[in-house]
Figure 1: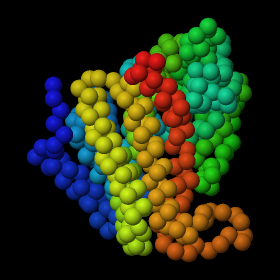
Figure 2: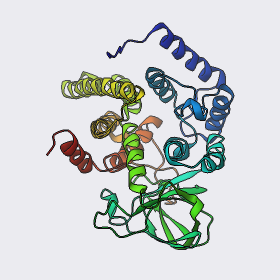
Figure 3: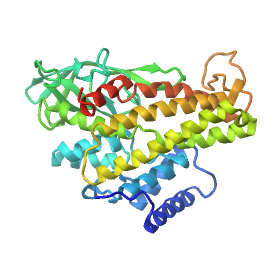
Figure 4: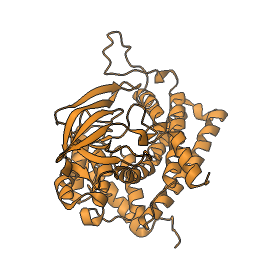
Length: 389
């Protein structure tokens, strides 16, 4: 079966429909990035349109888009500073696990709240000493009757301070193969014994957290699938997460912004800078086609496999390179300045607002080579699955 990378008339009509929805939702002003009011308005519009669960199977309320439509959707929404999918980790990460491995009772209990964005979820995977080597996790859960008692610690838990629930990997048995004996639990963050403390990142944000479990009692009915099979479930989730970490839409936005800023400042006439920008664009366009080909293969029924690691690795390299070029275009105006600082002598901002935004994005982007599995881990996966080393 061949793949046609050209948009059809139906694809163009769908793109126009997406643009029309954005324009109708925000008639008075362009959507503002990471603005709670605008994101709430966007969620209401998606619910009304039937597009909120745009990556879900039709069986569970998804729209049944083609791979090309999903590709168009992400490009158009990201270009408009809108989240391609509402509902956060619950919508994009837990829901696929519930579709594949959750019981009918669990699906009926959790999916409606995820779709309506009534409950927020966080991911309890990484631990001290078990981040990239996730199978070495030590958070333990012992069964006592109809509950598991959880003891341990998770780190770098994005959004845990805002989450209602956590989907969490715990060790329920010690096996010779460390990937065995891992179980997938859903934990109510209000359960006694759950503690959340902030980790402030280099860009001044409170997005990450340390979560500790001290005798946390989790009902057995909150276990996904079989005991000891959590690694199998999580591995599939990580593969799809990494496919979504090619950062192509974000990188295209960055590329356009860099070109505009460098043109305004005259930096675009510098041969060295222009050459690096053009080389990056060529590589980004190649990654864009690779991502579309992967989406097409997934839509045809194939799992992304090691391709997800290739996309994630190259996407990370490009987004970090683009943020560096953006800072170079901003020049001295890119000096870090965070409006939320408590430092009484904090300098007043000077220069264009985009320069400060991109300075913060540069710092945020340093984590891209760690999030979702380090670059080293991606290379190991590719060596084993592709090169057969």
